[in-house]
Amino acid sequence: MPVDSKLGGLHGGIFIAILVVSAAAFPALAWPWYLLAPLGAYAGLVLAIPPLRRTAPRFHAGRIAGLPLAGALLLSAATVGVLVVFDWLLQPQTSQLAARIPVAPFGNVVLAGVCFSIVNAAMEELVFRGVLYESLARDWGATAAIVVTAAIFGLAHVHGYPPGPLGGILAAGFGIALGILRWWTGGLALAIACHVLADATIFGLLAAAGAFATRIQPLT
Image 1: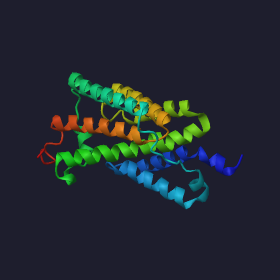
Image 2: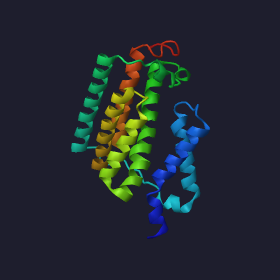
Image 3: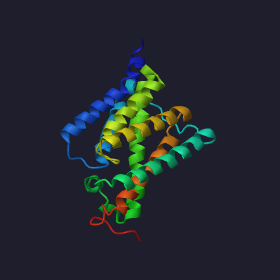
C-alpha cells in the first residue's frame, strides 16, 4: 500500500495527539483556544509535511437543498425543542459553564452569542465531522465514522450543556444525527448550520438564566 494511502487514515490520530498534548501543556486554555490552538497546530503540521498535505481531509459544503435541507430543518427544530424542555424540566446549574465563555470582550450579549454560536459550531464540526470523520471513514467506512465520532462528541460534552451523563447521551444522539447529515449531504454546511442553531439556543438559555449578568452588558 502506498505511504500516502496509509497516512490518510492517520489524520484523526494525529489531531487527537495534538489535542491531548495541548490540554496537558496548557490546561487553563479558555474557549475558543482549547480547540482553536490544536486546529492551528494540526493545520501547520499538515502544511509543513507534503505526505500529510496530500492526504489531508478535503472539506466541502455538500448539498444544501431538497431533502437534506428539509432533514436539517427538522433536526434543528427537534434539537431546539429538546434543549428547551431539558432546561425547563431540570433547570441545571449553568454558572460554571457560563464562566468558561469569555463574553465580556464582546460588549453585549447579542454579539457574544452570535460569535460564540458560529465559532464554536464551526470548530467542533471541523473536528468531529471533519478531521475525525474523514479519517475514520477512510479506514472503517461511514457507519463506523458516524458512531465513533458521535460517542466521542457525547463524552466531550458531559461537562457542557446539557450537563451530566444525560447531557452526554443527548449530545451523542445529536452527534449521530449530524454524522448522518454529513454523510447524506457529502459536506459540512448543513451540519454546521444545525450546530450553530443548537449553540445559539444554549447561549440563549444561559443568558435567560442570568448566567452572564455580572460580566456583560444586558441586551440593548
